[in-house]
Length: 374
Image 1: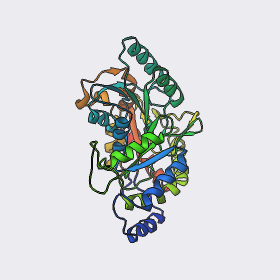
Image 2 (image 1 turned 90 degrees about the vertical axis):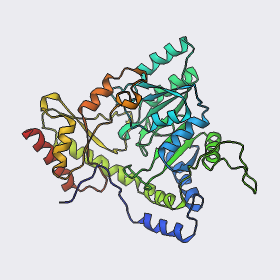
Image 3 (image 1 turned 180 degrees about the horizontal axis):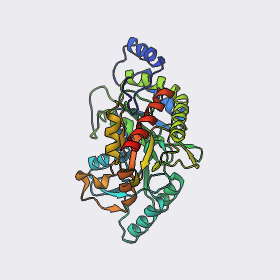
Image 4 (image 1 turned 135 degrees about the vertical axis):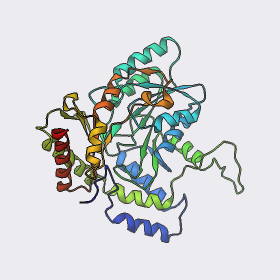
């Protein structure tokens, strides 16, 4: 039996054809028909106003903050249960951070904690310049409520939908709820370009981001610069792969949903195991299936991951919250107990869309055996 990875790339074959077409066009760099086409494809798929293809999801978050006007001395509030990218992007701007805890319904930013914190900040005349709300594990946050709260106080919303392409909230695409949204096409995402990202949203701001992403070069024959720019554009070759992957996204989502259902059925009778809830106000993309372990199981997430690793099955604990990361130890946090508990109890199971039913059964058997014998 081969190794089962958490979320490996799933290639259909059309990506190779598109890649070779881009290669044969000799547009190898960060310009070309494939880049333009990939941006248009993402706009058509999500309903976003505009899009710019970038080198990473982190680059998209950084540029989102820059064009939204975040500067040194500002404060940006970020979901604490997340990968480090949104927090790092804030640091790049010179702004300071504040973390907001999760709710138990979506595991994303708690709107009620946000509401109380915004009211307190407004009273003190210290509102944040922006809020980055993260859609973790392919499930959207309560984006309508969070958007209403931020609009009430004139605070910009950046939606980190790096893990949630193809997900929806109340029928509206992930990534399109804030003024700007970011996607990631890293190798482990539901679709991949091997490495890359996309910024979507307000057309004027996206156009500004496009300009900055190309070293802020002025439209003249010689090299003229009046702004500091960044080398953040996606290559034409990787964009070709992205369009091929995006065309297959509905099928990948369907398969990951089926894998989630199979895990729920296979582990239904195992004491002490529960699953990340899926809020029926939205439709997750199923990027990863997560279980939680009750303390009565006698196993920690790290111990279960080690047991699965011994059978050549990759698994990982849930995100370690940002407020528990040593690098951000001094950052103020609103709440934090829920995210800390989810880290203490959560485990990500292999969820790649190329998994077979036998692969899923193998993981179920391994989890059941570890918990029974643990």
